[in-house]
Length: 396
Image 1 (cartoon, rainbow, N blue to C red):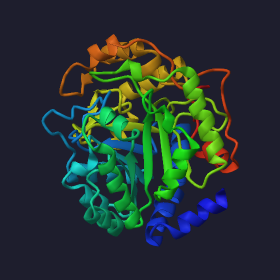
Image 2: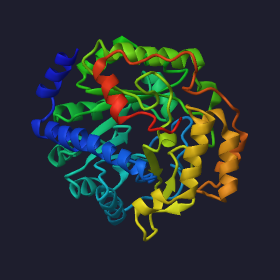
Image 3: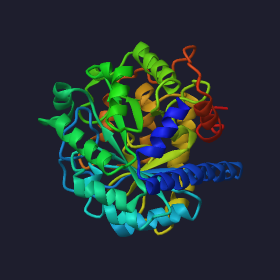
């Protein structure tokens, strides 16, 4: 499997893009985690990875979406992004997740990538705006990987995404990425209507389409229309974890997950402090689905000082870690609401109903299922998770 995957990576993507990925994301990413661990020993919490929703606009209307995609446009402009990224780089960061809305609706996205050739960006996208020209621009810039969301077959995709002909348009964007030799991934928010995509057949199809990595994440019941009927059962979550572990040892495609450590124990990236989120209004939030904040990137102190000195983020991390190894939003939305009220945090949505939405949620299971842990089998994933993506003492 490793040799086959290595052959794919050496022959399919543009060599310059592969070098950017290996150095900016691989080597420098590992170094940023090491710096994070050193900061932790000094009691300083600043995440090695930042996830930034640069715009709220989107052309789709997905079930369970928590972003105000139909509201007036909010976005973080080029100057603000440069300020955020430069401050983070000064403290060792090199990887940034770019979210939306639909990030490619941001008129300055390519300029943002160009301004930071020493960084690596993962762009979470529905793929429909990736024309041949845009794919060629991404190849020219060289420091970004599109992570394209696919939510099922034609019927399910249209239902989940709220538009017609969604799958074909997304696959056209994916093909443009392949033509221009980009490193590209496919993400799926797994729920009741697309659970059948969790299959070896689907992964083999992705490989045939030139996809280099896949990301299966479980559906989060949040937002103004949470669609609780789409939530997975505990058995289904365990099956997804087992599938990921087995396929990692079998197929020449990387499989990403952010919710389990090398021993198969659940973790939350927010609770461990490995990542926080910046919303399209500049709000500094614990994670993308917790739309409350006390701070904003407009603060003149800079993002390092803002995040490392935030009592709000600190309380969220510590309370979440004491409460569960899973998702506190799913398991204990009541505690999330109490923390918001305790800190008098601002609702960062334009709809202004996030607290009422949180208070209306019912408690449900997440990835934390004690006694049903499935450890990593493949040595490379096990080693990487043990050293660069684990609990960081949050649960001790």
